[in-house]
Image (cartoon, rainbow, N blue to C red; front, side):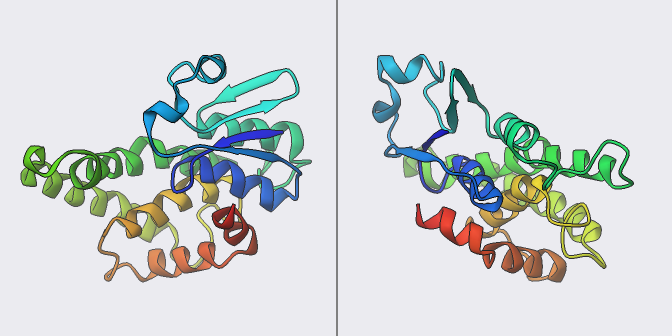
Length: 201
């Protein structure tokens, strides 16, 4: 499998998953510059010229959540994804998708307002509202983690998705000082050997 990857982006989810599963893969790394992805060859793999994307034999895919689900279904051998009749299956699905539905929208706004836009175009009011919304989204994670180490019970693909979003949120300055469960969760995830290997890629 080949992973098209830019460090410190959503593509780390795919690399992290492959490390957790112990699967072999090749990485094609790019710079965080649109021009590095706007080649005719790469456009055939990802029409929006973004990462992540994968090539798995004759199959190409993009969108990190879809790729994580695909890899787990095709190559996971039942690991990191509860069966449909498991008691935590609904929780797994909920928190797998919570990241893109709830956590990442304010994260995206924060990235735009603090990194991507030139300083003269940044809007402090928009940034403040995004930070406030992200805090609310993390409150739900804090509540869900009460009494358990991982978001849907045992470590799973839901942690690679929503857990990664929590890691990014803290890195961007989200205040988790009043969220001991989230703080411990982030520490637990970032200490995993597979996560450390993925970061080093």
